Amino acid sequence: MSPVAKQLPSSVLVVGAGGREHALVRALLASPAKPRVLCAPGNAGIAQDATCFPVAADDIAGLVALAQREKAEFVVVGPEVPLSLGLVDALTKAGIPAYGPKADGARLEASKVFTKQILLKHGIPTAPAGIFTEVQPALDYLKQRGAPIVIKADGLAAGKGVVVAQTLGEAEVAVRDMLAGNKFGSAGSQILIEDCMFGDETSILVVVSGRDYVILPVSQDHKRIGDGDTGPNTGGMGTYSPAEVVTPELLARIDREIVRPSVDAIAAEGIEFRGTLFIGIMLTASGPSVLEYNTRFGDPETQVVLPRLKTDVLALLWAAARGELRGMSLDVRPDAALCVVLAARGYPDKFPKGDVITFPAQLPPQTTVLHAGTARNPAGQIVTNGGRVLGVTALAPTLREAAARAYAACEQIECASKYYRRDIGARQLNRP
Ligand code: GLY
Image (cartoon, rainbow, N blue to C red; front, side, top):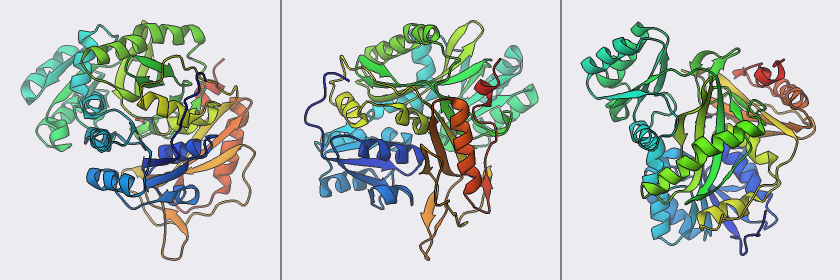
């Protein structure tokens, strides 16, 4: 990366408690600047690497006070909720530099309607959609468009607000649940009904600073709970990078038709965006098309993207936060990375907590276990404490070797409620 960002911060607070934050903590600790890394609230695994503080990720005043008390010189915000609650606005007001958009930029994730309006206004490829607050006009629109069709709650719904309805019956249930049944509270009081797109889905994570940006290595997530992409949607059950379906030519097209226009559109709307713009893209037969914007690092995309960077992640995020990204480029390892999420059986619905996890004494080479939903019980043992529990991540010269390493580690980790998909990466590995 050049020019090298001077004067890097000597202490960084990471906000969040999941696998993404564990990956961020590890990447920041690997910086040649050797910063002190703190995390709030963190989890049992993050606490092995960084000092954790029991301040919730949505406690804006508490996080600002923590950053001041611990003299954090930089704050990196993981999840979308604190961003949309204005954590970066509050930190900026307190004079503490932070990575992540302010609340106006976070609205690109917090309101799907807002994003759809921007995409359509600026001619960025996306599916046609209708916006509704009343049941009957929504049902009329459904009949007009037919199935399959996508129903999206406008607001944040912890990844559960999108229904891909295969039949008009399913679509009607989703519309009624959201608009009349209050299923997602105010997040579902306005909905989008969007044409269904078909193709490979890909995650494009872009570090943005105003009109400047760098595109991180491309990855693919596995959103469904079951092998072969079956069952309900989850936050993500595994990822790999690079995603070879995105050839250099296709990436150049995505940059030209989607990334550059998106960054320019956001700036033209008066938003000074400094953070990660995570663009979910469907590679349709007629070209790449935007599914959604997220305004943070993906989880578990981050777990495979950051380990592939030789670039100092601290310098990269610091430069973006300070508006000094121009002229920077990335140094990427040629190795493939693959992450298998170990979940608690029953996720994404009901799942147990408190099951003891036993880790092998030795992991395969270049394999690491990132913690997501873990805690310590009164006996000091590491136990499950969430739906997605661990992210087992391996690097290797090929994706096949990375998968073999990650899966060997998954088998060695013991936990009564352990569940994981057996086909992470298969789409690419089985491609003729
Ligand atoms: N893995 C999808 C997301 O972070 O939203």
